[in-house]
Image (cartoon, rainbow, N blue to C red; front, side, top):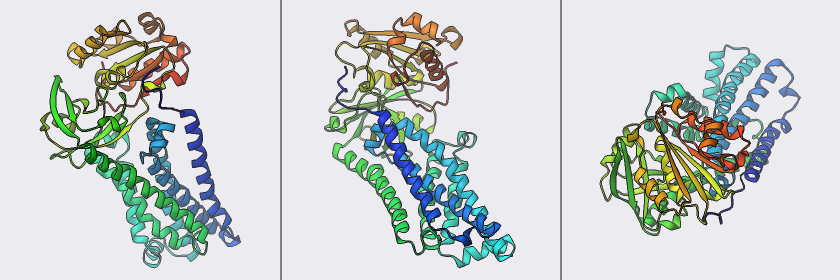
Length: 452
């Protein structure tokens, strides 16, 4: 068992409860539409189109609000479901939300124009000028389209993380701007105070969650722990470690393998927070991240000055030793993905046997090698490190190769962090030898480079 074993993870139950609550909320949302309809809402084709548009608006907005909840960093939700899964759900919900709200805009204009027997452009103008808060709703819709379009892979690949992040934040404004026109104009809200209360409460809880867990709590913690840059260490070509000092950092309850969102109070870093994993188990006074040069932000970390104040949000992630249930673990790191692997090694105690595989394209990419060698040399035989350097064809990460390298591969808990092809290959190998899904733990890393 590890020293993190006192933290209970119940991902299966957490996922079930999260899905149940989300489903109940969706059911109540649809019920608002169904229970307030009358014969006039289906008495003609255009009336049916209008009713359908309202249902699209309700469900689309519910998905948007739910998407915000998923990334509100609510601790018990993060622990129960897992950060990576929450982010995955958020990404999958977002397109449905945008499409449904887009359908609402199209069909509501079409339905009203058909009922009034006037051209679409005249109906659009009438709706904007005669209904409450419609200009704000239009602005929100435009912002949502902007955030949605820039989130597609091809569009996102052409912009910096900072630009994408700022545009993505517009989603909060888009959802907020849509609220008033809904409750003042929607037939399911006008004259239905219980429906209006439910919808208002949904928005209020969403806003409070973001303000408390994404802004308030991180700000208070950062000030309380007085986190500042202590020094920057060059680890290799394009790779730096930022070591930060603070007080009573153990009270952050962070573990090796987890990550924080870091915001450095220095020009070029203040506006946007970036997620980086810990590259060493945290201590009472120090935390460390190790970052590869993948863009303007990561490149400029090498220029951080000692004493720079740091604001943190986290810790996040369920990539922790406490999830292991086997006396033997296999830890696989690809490239800079070795950093959370390096950190989690120190969390396993009581004789847990560890095999560490470090995949890299070139020898100079073996960052933190000296530390890994030190940990192996002082482990009393509990740690074995395997360096696999070179092209993929020389080191196939299939079931046969991994079993040859690590004979107990099929019985181990597997932790992996690295480029997507590496993760997929090891996952396939684990499936081929019958490793249960709950014994395969991967950290979602965004890589701009791959191991060749």
